[in-house]
Amino acid sequence: MAFTGEATKQAFPDVPVIRYEGPSTTNMLAFRHYDPDAIVEGRPMREHLRFAVSYWHTFRGTGSDPFGAPTMVRPWEQGGDPLAAAISRTAVAFEFLEKLGIEYYCFHDRDVAPEGATLAESNNYLDAVAAELKRHQDRTGIKLLWGTANLFSHPRYVHGAATSCNAEVFAYAAAQVKKAIETTRALGGAGYVFWGGREGYQCLWNTDMKREIDHLARFMHMAVDYAKEIGFSGQFYFEPKPREPTKHQYDYDCAACINFLRANGLEQYVKMNIETNHATLAGHEMQHELEYAGMQGFLGSIDANTGDTLVGWDTDQFPTNIYLTTQIMYTILKYGGLAPGGINFDAKVRRESFEPVDLFHAHIGGMDAFARGLKIAAAMRADGSIQRLLEERYASWSAPLGKRIESGSETFRSLEAEMLAKGEAAACRSGRQELFENLLNTYF
Ligand code: XLS
Ligand code: NI
Ligand code: NI
Image 1 (cartoon, rainbow, N blue to C red):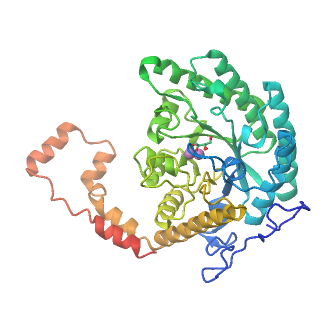
Image 2: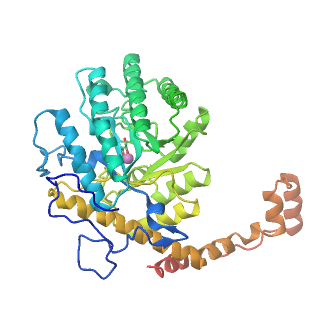
């Protein structure tokens, strides 16, 4: 992608367009592994990875935390009229996307446009900013991966949105999501995400859990119905997260979400948007969540980040661990890729990394880590040793008895007869975990 450089006054004047220079470059503002047009398993890297920038973290993150004030130095944020600031910020965002060669972005309604005094005013603000986003999209070819609505920051959502005890808050949230879907559609968005926000509880004594979960299902059906009505054909996603901000979120993990979707007749409309740090907060590895969703046809999109093993919090750090990105890309390749989903960096620079250039280092590192993970995963698949070992481990299921059980032609009675005759099952073989792990290391 060529930098079209509309802005006469650039937000990142000292940062060039980031290019692939290969593993031996000494330039830290270059890609060592992400080579967008390089072919892996028959497709260019850009099509496998479909990177997206999160508008909220990258363009709205301030660096504040529960103990301290904002730290981010953002020379383009000059205060003044919030709508004017939101409109001029779009040029900063697109300069950033273009310089990184990232082809997608994701937003919440209230990241891109300010909240007004009334719903109507908020809607007007969103329309004004969306027109500008559309103009930048048309100018650059950059696309919207998914949109969503912020149903958790405003005090009206103190008890949740779709699961609020206040029916008028449910109604307000419905109106907000209606508008967010319309805006996503107007921008040609490839998807729309539901993340629970405050859809959960702090205390079961004051919570009617059944009623709240039923309301969440009603809400999602209304969204699906409205999308059909206006011809929004993007993919809906549900993003699991076990806790934070609430003690227990209803979208706990992939298993809970998929159960919710199936129990409520939503399974054909909604897939998973799986976030690494949310998986670990749920006590799972990311690979587990991807595998769980993938094996049932619910793998949609991912929010790429990582947590810190010493902090039990959604720290949303940029992913740099190539074992992690290899696991992720191996599973994604196994299930045929993410499109129309992608890899959204739902990640923020550390509060101590407050200069604009840190935003580039963060994304370059994440993109290179995923590109490297993709290359390693593809090499593992081409070589096939791990797959062969795995198949060997299950060899008895390809033998006559295993086949008959899998095909449903055996019963408790017939199996009892078989084992009474044999007296004991065939001896088990070693699981060879260490061998698998050592083999994995040979690809790095
Ligand atoms: C918060 C979530 C959020 C969603 C979009 O933890 O990750 O950012 O991705 O609402
Ligand atoms: Ni997320
Ligand atoms: Ni998160």
